[in-house]
Image (cartoon, rainbow, N blue to C red; front, side, top):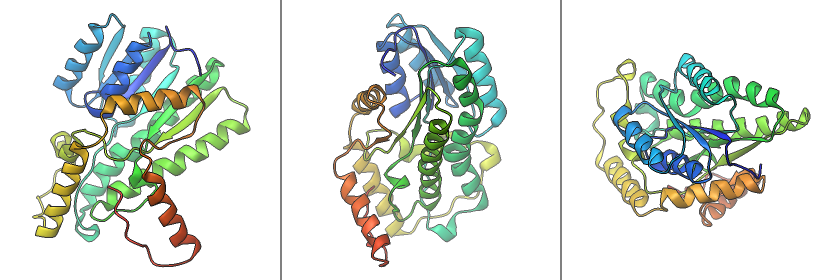
Length: 281
């Protein structure tokens, strides 16, 4: 996909971080932008920023972990703009806990937002895009947590590994039917976002008693928080994403050092040795 002007993009998790940067970049490319998020006030702020550029924008309050909300997002997009050309399944959350400390509610929340939302997005939007018969592109946000395995965030890792293999399989399936819909999976390293404060958007049906983190877990969480705050600006990630779309590039690895983490993990597997414990995030 080379041309973006007057096309329509749908971005989930658009109220902050990478999603907001992508939505604003879409506007800068002259696109109609449909922005969705569960964080209403921040979503309105994004809407105002995009309106100020003169672009057409449609905000849709969305709980991406609910199929009916994703279906409503698609319906409102088609009703307003008539088509969808770019889909960014971007919304995501993270939770810190040792693997055995995660409650079932924890798993349901993280998998619901990070993985099931992508499944719902693909299930709902892909048939629409295929039927259009025009060049389209789907970008699913994975993570280094989808191609490596870091301690203390098992639910996040599982969800993001799922996103990566889901994206790979979708790529193969679309190729098999010679579709004009292309796919990328975004696996960023440290990006300056508010990801570590994901609990702000945890809804009531996922509530649980707070588990007191150990000192080691607290230290790891604080280290990751600092790591993200010193990370790549989201706007730079958005630029990398659009370069990948233009060049029909599947894997979007925003940070050069990611490849070393991937290489180490692949060598562990090929040599059948114990995980080497490289912490990518």
